[in-house]
Length: 392
Ligand SMILES: Cc1cc2nc3c(=O)[nH]c(=O)nc-3n(C[C@H](O)[C@H](O)[C@H](O)COP(=O)(O)OP(=O)(O)OC[C@H]3O[C@@H](n4cnc5c(N)ncnc54)[C@H](O)[C@@H]3O)c2cc1C
Image (cartoon, rainbow, N blue to C red; front, top):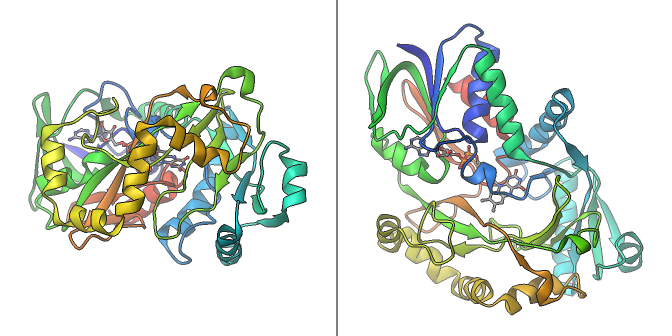
């Protein structure tokens, strides 16, 4: 019997294992993941941005943990020689409506304690000559990193402290009683005094396996990217983001330098019919049936018909996608948009159609389930882990 079992080898699961062993050195721990390598899903398919925490509702877990997590990520990267670059972020308003939302966002950033500067069109053109807008917010602290690398380094530390990491082991049953939790599947069974499930796109299914009375479902939203030709990768130096729609949990198509020197465009947000199907048009029958029969999804769809159809059109026709980027970077052309693998976001949706914006973590007597850990959970992984360890 182990002291701890963690399900999920994404950044949240591995950070949790790391934190447990920091708090309780010598504890026995096993981490299991169904994939053959760590960071296979969201952690290995994201924009690699270390967010500063400007967007999130003041007082929310996201607002607090993102700020703390960005600090932790900076320190961890420096301590372990992980490539990391503070490139700053510009949030660009392209018309008067966006400018009004930009001013609201400025207030929110100040409330959240994040250093931000409001600049006019001329200053924007001076800083990023290829970008156009009526004004922008500049966040100097935003950085980029490779979260797969961060996860691998965390995992090496976890192994060095004597823990086991078992890959290729899908968990299909969870039984909790008064003395232990047993998790099992086709490749084995593990018994532990405490269990933490960090299942990302499968978080709701793991919670249901454990018998938690949850009233939410994970709905997958594909985040499709393009990559610019290498000759264009110096187009911008800073991360360039649109002003987000406050009603939606997604940040909009942005231009992001990556730590390996590429420049990506994206991600959009299109309903997916396969939680782990990265191919365009991929459908998983079980996933599709669950989504399409879920009342919460019908309500989300009804409330966002126009946005949903626009995102679908722009996913199918590159020209629409390009138009979203050309709003702030007019010189981009269709031939600049080269294919790049997409990511799939795990977004929790309640039965009444509410998109859960904040992180959501539930516990039972012996277990903790991370039910909603969308962006910026890669940035916030260590504070999420600390929160989990406190509640264990
Ligand atoms: C397109 C996109 C862009 C993003 N951009 C950013 C960004 O720039 N900055 C940022 O901070 N965040 C970003 N995010 C969010 C961030 O990537 C996620 O919040 C974070 O990676 C979540 O980590 P996780 O460990 O919870 O989930 P995951 O990385 O998805 O890991 C979950 C793991 O659980 C395993 N698992 C599931 N079910 C089982 C089972 N039954 N048995 C065994 N194992 C199981 C899976 O195989 C998987 O490895 C982005 C996400 C996406 C999709």
